[in-house]
Length: 66
Image (cartoon, rainbow, N blue to C red; front, side, top):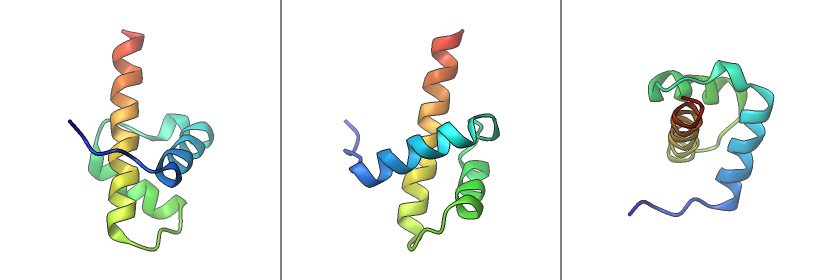
C-alpha cells in the first residue's frame, strides 16, 4: 500500500490540475520542473510528493478516458 497524502498536498495538486490541466504529463521529471516553476515550495520532498501525486492523477485520468 502507498503512503497517505496530506490535505496540503491534495489541495495544492487539485488547484494545479484545475489551473494548468493540459500542461502536466505522465513524466514525473517534467511534472517536477513544472511544479517548481508554478509553486513556491519550501522543500524538495514536498515538491516531489506533489509532482508524484500529479503524475499519478494524470495516469489515472488517462486510463479512465480510454
